[in-house]
Amino acid sequence: MKKLAIITVTVFLSIKAASADPDNDSLIINDDIQLVTETAAPIHLENLDTIYSGWRFRTDETQALQVDDFDNPAMVFVDKAIDLFNTIDGIEGKACVSCHESVAQFRGLSAIMPKVIDGELVVLESFINDHRDQVMGAEPWKWSGEKMQSMVALIGLQSRGMPVNVKIDGEARPYWEQGKEMYYTRFGQLQLSCANCHEDNYGKMIRADHLSQGHANGFPTYRLKQAKLISRHNRFRGCIRDTRAETFAEGSDEFKALELYLASRSIGLTVETPAVRQ
Ligand code: HEC
Ligand code: HEC
Image (cartoon, rainbow, N blue to C red; front, side, top):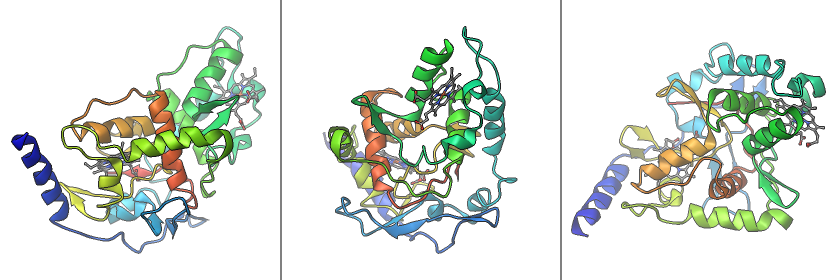
């Protein structure tokens, strides 16, 4: 027990060692799309007055990569998804484009996902895979694989600049409650909840990282460290693993609920997909 307590204290000491607020930069993409990176927190958030996009916590160099699509390394994957959209796959001999004239028809969708369909909480990845199975007779894509995340990025890009506006009442309520409970649950040997880092300590340094509020409005994000698109659920796994806990599977009901709750914390920020992070 004593040893664990020391580890926890050490982590917190290193968190508290330095402190820096989000910067004051504003994010205008391609000199055209003005994103909301700071706004009043949604009413349901009891412990925060203002919410900030993770972009505001990144270095100037990392921020710059998201300001112009020519510099944004995620755009390579968006282009790959456009190819996938036009490619026939599955026993029905259809491509996405056979039924959907253009991805532009999905404008607005990512701003309101996840959502409940027929009583079940659906996130974009699960929707796409069920859909591939049912309407195309095609093999499912791996959750965090390149094809899936490229497609999620392409669909997300259609909503870039639109405010996150997920539904959290009605049928969505129990899923939202489940996600909220997870957010405040302390995990692992370090006994840290999402809130301990992203609500209580944002703005501070944890090792080399400037801690943000942990919003998911830029996902899938291109991570420079991994040189690829990272899914939301992959990020959740990484964060939970950092607390030295066993974690949930990508695509699990737990992570879907957490995704909904996290989206509700970002209501009022704009969709930034595909964002670039360290
Ligand atoms: C055989 C025709 C067909 C094909 C092929 C097809 N879709 Fe669909 N898709 C539909 C229909 C019909 C709907 C609306 C009903 C529904 O939600 O299932 C839809 C709905 C969607 C939606 C949800 C739109 C919304 O506003 O809720 C997305 C996203 C989507 N499709 C993506 C894709 C992608 C990506 C592909 C290729 C991997 C694809 N579709 C291939 C017929 C098709
Ligand atoms: C030990 C501290 C810690 C805990 C606990 C933690 N995270 Fe994180 N998280 C980080 C760090 C460090 C980063 C990278 C810097 C940043 O963006 O804040 C990060 C990044 C993120 C991001 C990406 C933000 C962006 O702008 O791209 C999301 C989303 C996220 N965390 C969600 C969660 C969720 C959900 C939980 C709880 C299951 C959680 N985190 C628990 C430390 C933590």
